[in-house]
Image 1 (cartoon, rainbow, N blue to C red):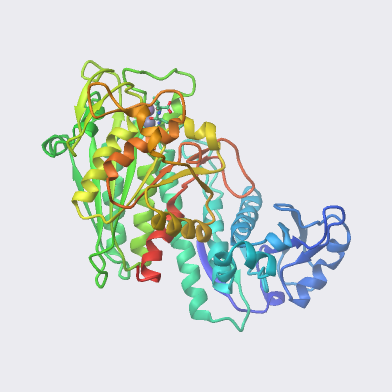
Image 2 (spheres, rainbow, N blue to C red; image 1 turned 45 degrees about the vertical axis):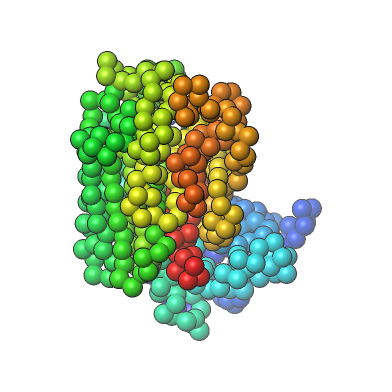
Amino acid sequence: MNAKLSFDPVAQLETECLAVAVVDEGTAKEPRPALLTDDAAIRSAAADLLSSREVTGKIFETVMVHRPAGLKARRLLLVGGGRAKNFSAYELRKVAGTAVRFLKPKSIKALAFLAPANWGGSADQAAHSTLVAERRGPAEAVKAIVEGAFVADFDPDFYRSDRKDQRMGEITVVAAASSDRKSLERALEEGRIVGESQNFTRELVNEPGNRMTPTILARRATEMVKEVSARANGAKLTAEVLGGDKIRELKMGAFWSVAQGSDEPPALIVIRYEPAGAPASPTIGLVGKGITFDTGGISIKPSDGMEKMKYDMAGGAAMLGAMRAIAQLGIKVRVIAMVCATENMPSGKAQKPGDVQIAMSGKSIEIINTDAEGRLVLADGLHYARQLGATHLIDAATLTGACVVALGGVNAGVFANNEEMFQRFAGALKVSGEKMWRLPLDEEYFEQIRSGIADIKNTGGRGAGAVTAAMFLKEFAEQTPWIHLDIAGTAWMDDNKAWIAAGPSGVAVRTLVEFVRSFENAAN
Ligand code: BES
Ligand code: MN
Ligand code: ZN
């Protein structure tokens, strides 16, 4: 999809479809729809619709008319944005996405989306979130619209022979003639980079296990690195792929214990981003779980729903998408990403419950359940990232079914061993609009993973499964400020939404980018 800006008067715009957001300024009883524009031509073209009660401004409501009077656009699409006082970049992203997904099946290939004028900024909003209110300028609007449009343009049905190419050809964001054009051009470019990078992650996650082995994932990562580095303005990425021999040589006994059961060779994918002018510290370490298929190993999973375990590499794929965006944006912060990629298979070579493994850090681990494999590969990934100089760590993993039970598909779980790190991350969440909820890491939980014969065991019994998994990882982050994201419930969406297709969500990419960017903005 091509994205561009227009500063022409909207009435003169020749487009297949002009989309405008409508919010509700009324009460629950009496909706009062209001267009998010001051443009007289649009106001007059939509006047009858707004007074008809067919349009309420309800979130994701879509009403389209043909040949709107007084406009050169062939169609006018009104998209509901919900309550006026709650309308923020979070809603705008989805409203733009809703417009794209509404038009796609109608084979409409071009869309002009009107950037809202005078949006938000009410006293209410400023009170509930200073960060969101601050960033509610025209550039934020353009970025949100473009991000939302790219994310909406993705459909996961790659392997259907009747797949129609319904991709949107072009989105034009219409902004006021008086805008600071340079800053809007930059915002458009940022929105495109971030949206495309999130889709890059979704593409990887969507692939089935036979088409996304550790070797293939490593190849896709190196191809991405080459592509990004070849672009004139993008700062360089470098990739290195360590195979099974190297993993053993580094004494990554926890990672190898999972890989040993599979005929597919594992891959430790390491990507470095060291932009000129960035200080040596901080170096952000991004560590992703890259289980390309999780059968459970000898503690094998029930067959019902096992096919979904192809998405057990979503944490790793999120790190790759984030690196793609960070480099293309030219953010001046050092980052090192690591994807611990392997299958988890049962076989004659597979590890068994009761086995004891020695992690790279020297800690001994009693394996209680071979299906708790994510924490094993991440243990060595986190340790190695620290060894390579990471001063701050974030891992992302489809780690536990318990996190799905606790938070469902709405919020990802966040864990942190450091308050400052968490606050910074919470700031990034506000900007990205992704939903995550903090869960605790009290020392008391450690008792559940204390082992009788080794330093630690890899499962903690029935209670607080998401927490005990995080407690396990915490042992390997040691004193380094660290965030753990459990995306088991949010990396794959079972249902279509108005603004996004069912399937891989690309969760965490946008927040990781904003988190890394915060080090640039704040100079620590
Ligand atoms: N990959 C799974 C977690 C998962 C479950 C992801 C559902 C997505 C959806 C992970 O490797 C796993 O099997 N975890 C076990 C841990 C248990 C054995 C302690 C689980 O959650 O059941
Ligand atoms: Mn598992
Ligand atoms: Zn797993």
